Length: 236
Length: 236
DNA sequence: CGAGCAGTATTGATATACAAGCAGCTGTCG
DNA sequence: CGACAGCTGCTTGTATATCAATACTGCTCG
Image 1 (tube, rainbow over the protein chains, first blue to last red):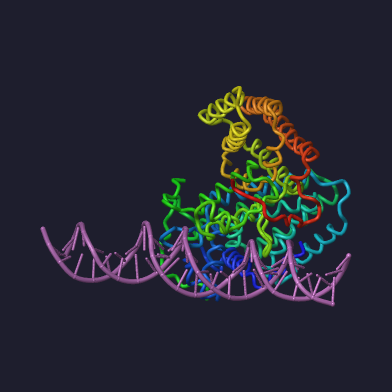
Image 2 (cartoon, rainbow over the protein chains, first blue to last red):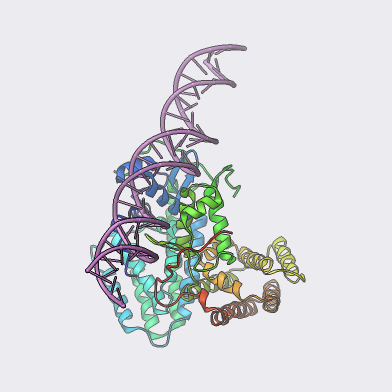
């Protein structure tokens, strides 16, 4: 990807900025996202803002109610479970596709990643970025790196839920599991790698359930619609 | 989903119409899709057309070259392989999640589907629709029906390739494999179901390889860009 | 024959206006 | 006091016109 140059292409910028703010919970679930307000805040017209909101709604991160407003969607447990199933299926399958000879450069990159994960003073966002890179890296080892984009696109709800409940202790525990997985992969022990991976992903998922009990207001109720909370100041 | 009423919501309509035409190869790979021409043909403004093209480009079905034009993307073997990996991972994983007691209504629905598949005189599009419904139905048996939307969104390239090479003979063969899979599932023989499913999906994939040799002009070359063919009449 | 230059078509973005519909407020009437 | 009708304002959806930026075409001129 020799990245498109596109000097002032603002849709990409707006989309990525909004997406990041939604995923990091800087824009918490339920926040009203007015096209006009966003356009004014970002100094662009409604068009790129609107296009970005449409894309985010396709991802499920934003809900658009036609003549009412657009809102950051609440975390939907059903979508979290879907994303969990999807990523688990993909990551487990990729372990079965590992080649006999691993890409040594990539392995070293992953080892460095794991060292960084254990660096003291690492904040939540930093850990998340490394976590993402690690899991995508594992997929690349089996030649399915680009499948990660689909997984990433589908797991927005899962990521938001996880971010709510990541503590230093849990991230340290996850980092240790990462080491266990990579060690098994490098040793060629697919069975152990599968077990470790499954344990790891399930631990992540169980974390989500705990979070839901802790802060239910960020999760969707069973009834479909609902938000309709207006006049929420957005964007600083 | 009790579908939004939205009397004259045209973006959804335009998007779905375009998507269908692309997937059914009514708009073959390489076709130029001018925003202005489409808007004129569909009697709508550039706005919904443009939004639809953006969505399709996110799916990879359309390529937008900023100051050149928009084109139906050629079938990308890499994306076909990705989609194959993804669907295989998901469908195999769902077989592992089958409950002890299957939903009898759903099973009957699937049996009826298979009977329809063997109806003589069934055309390609009809078979495709049934095939889609069957695979999604299997996912629903294990409670992961909604994961199909993600899979479906990612496998546009795969579907187009398959559509190129579906004959009556191959579809009859696929229908037989479907029966084998469902029988194994109903009997609770997960091992056999997995084997049958793997064989089936791989057969589908191998079909694609054969097609690529047969009509290479619909596939993307290794070099990234390329199309730049203008003045292609579109849309009847 | 080749190089350069204007012309034209394309998408990206802006600005404006109107359509359609929901929410809440207010005033009125029972 | 309470209920209800209508009005007002705000939202997204679409239309339309215009400009900007850029890539290809084809002609002109050397």
